[in-house]
Image (cartoon, rainbow over all chains, first blue to last red; front, side):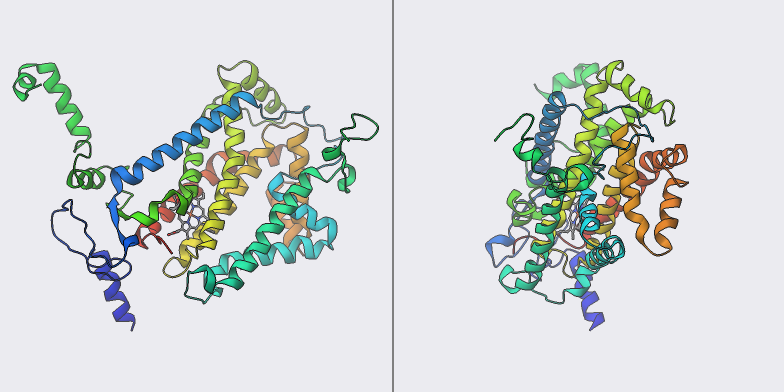
Length: 187
Length: 243
Ligand code: HEM
């Protein structure tokens, strides 16, 4: 069994079959004819250079233009010099840790600080070993997709709540969205 | 131009010799040349020669892994420029950031790029993880590359977190104070790990030194090595391709 698997792997490495087990025409020269004897349209291959490299180049270029445009317009924050005697209120962790801060607000510290994040971390590392379902089709993976979607939704919601809806003392605050009623009311 | 006139012009002949010694093959006029070019070019040979058409559809990867890597490179380059000016000392850090913003040529834009690219990278890496999950791309034989990926996500977060402290302004110091406080609730490990991270009980010079060293050397190096392994495995395991 193991031997069979490894011989398949070796054949794959040697380029004799594709990852899906289709036979491949091998030979010293790579002609312009398709290499794969394919049974399905999606198995069609193209040369990496230029096809993939071109896409990589374009996406990099788009990101660079975007970054430059933002960086010319918006300055990175720089507040007053650090002063350990003056605590800002609210004091917030960087946005990607606001989920943790939110949990600490709602649950006892050991749960919020240790058990939940520990479970998420260990669970994430173990995902491929816990999920024994061999299928990659969404319709066969309802449970996995459901659970992950709950995680994604909660993570995004906590970051938004922490950023926008948490005011002084990290308590609930509408002011950032609706404006302060006494000051510059947006309502 | 005929090849005859090339040989007669020593400068052009020399130029083409130099060019030919650097790039062993020309532009991809046929698939054969394209394959050779990819195989013999250091930067291109991290790719397989051929890829499944379905695997490189933009709608499939959404470019997210590639963009994460691009941002990592952009951060390395802009970070290098910031390092020319930044001084990791409690007394001078803030002023050196001001110098970057107001004295150094293009310093402000460089700092902005570094900052926004860092935020963007946290987002793209996380979204990349989500796309890998939703497509079940972590299933055999790619289980271990997912594990490497989780380490990369952690390193990305830690890079961002350690960098957050460096400007030594109110935002930096208090965000790190709150952030490291989050970690102190574990029994025994919690307070100890916070102490080790900060090199003391409070966010002070020891913490700044540690964060700086982690931020500019340790984490980028570790991240880079893991990325190389990650890419190597993407290639050896074969790209998942269409569902
Ligand atoms: C610094 C962070 C990371 C970088 C630069 C990176 C880069 C890449 C690249 C360039 C690919 C090729 C496909 C694509 O572009 O989507 C890829 C594939 C992959 N990545 Fe990442 N990645 C990172 C983090 C992660 C994380 C956090 C995970 C999951 C926890 C992960 C798991 C995977 C897996 C399983 C594949 C193979 C997917 C397939 O074959 O369809 N990576 N990565």
